[in-house]
Image (cartoon, rainbow, N blue to C red):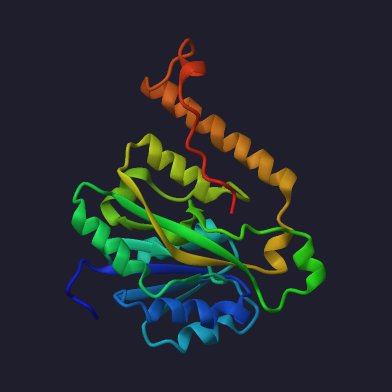
Length: 248
C-alpha cells in the first residue's frame, strides 16, 4: 500500500470479459503510483472472469446477480474506502502513469474536484477485418469524456450522487452532466491516460436506444438548469450548448 498520497480506490465492474480482464487489471496494479485497493464487482458473469480477478492479490472481489454496470459501479462505491475514486471497464486499459499524472494535477490545483485525460482507441487483436471495416475509429487521440479516464475525490462524487440505474446506455454521460450542473471543478489533461478497446461486443450497441437515452439525459440536464435558475426560457437559446461528452 502506498501511503504517500490520499487513498485511491479503483472500481471495475465485470460481466463475461475473461478474454480481456487480466490485461485490464494488470494495467491497474502496475501503475507507477499504486492504487490502494481494486474492487472488482462481478455482475453475474458465467465465464472465468471471477477466477482471474481473484488471482490478483490487490483485488477485492464481490459477486452479485446480473443487474447492469451502473448497479455494479454503485456497489463498488459502497465497498470502497478511498479518498479518491477511479473506474475502469473490464476491456480497457490504463497508461502506466495515469494515476500519477492526475495526482500531480490535483497537487497543482487544490480547487479541483475531478481530473480526466485523453483516450486512444484501438482494435482488439481478436477483431477480424470485416468487423474492423464496420467502424472507423479516430487515429488521433480524443478528449476522454469517459468513466475510465476519471479520478475524483470521494467528497466531490458524493455531491453528484450515484450512477443512474434506469439507463440502458449513457449513464456516465448523465452523471457527467450532473457533475457539470453541480459546478464541479474539472480538468482535462492533454496526455493519453486510457486506451479503449474496440471489439466485437461493443460494436453491437444499439444506436436507436443510444439516441433515446441521450435525449432523456439532455432534457433532464436542461430541466435541472432551469430549476436552479442557471437558464431561463427567454435566455435559453442564447446560452452556450451543453457540454455533452461524446459517446465512446
